[in-house]
Length: 177
Image 1 (cartoon, helix red, strand yellow):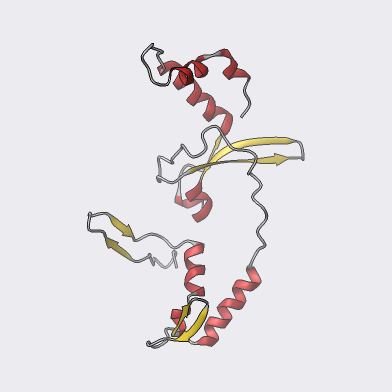
Image 2: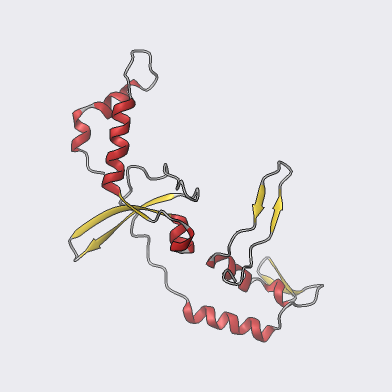
């Protein structure tokens, strides 16, 4: 659908904010395939009823689409990154596309763990969607730490004096996140 130039529906809110007009994601297409409205039916509280409109596609095509989905369905593994969160988790946004930057890691040869941050948009929609894909966690976190140490000036009246002092203390260098 994306290659053919199709986009999601769009509208403008009362406040003037444009919504939609984006490329289709895998989850959006899956939702559309699972929507009974396309075969002229409605799902109400788990029960399927005939709709008051003509179907857009026939039930045979809809059933074939569901067979294809079942063939390609992958079992989801438990989230592996649950015990390993980065220092900048839930803080970073991608400058190129505005999406969240997420922390993760890979284990190479069963013993070396490499931490990095990546753009969630590039992960979900493909590498062509965002120029920024992966950034090493250590270099990024060190840059932020260096910036903070250079900009923080401790005064007696500052509201978060304890936090500022902890960032500037030598103990910061011994912490592994």
